[in-house]
Image (cartoon, rainbow, N blue to C red; front, side):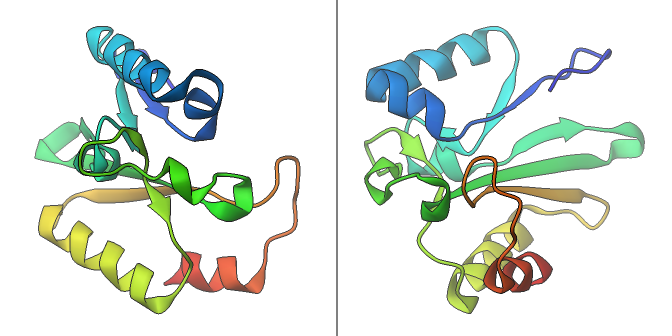
Length: 140
């Protein structure tokens, strides 16, 4: 996603890792960084994969964009970023515990005036059915 003010964002999900391996994911992230395009949802390690893309907005406001991937979209748990391993910000499940972990993480980052956006890659490609579990999690 690019806008006319020079802001760019890529929601990283399974394709870079699946087609090009860990080395390809690192290269993709390097190229995006060199081009000034922020990414969310994948990283060179777990800390970077979990970190939001932050876009500075008017009046000292920020938009924090977090991205997640779920197994239901075809992302295998093995693609989860680790301490020293590139990968994706993988949600192990859609439990209250996982939701609580996300809430705790975002509360530590967020300022009162910030806008949080969560992009979750879940469900089958070209599928339009939303499960009750996904609705419950999204409303959490």
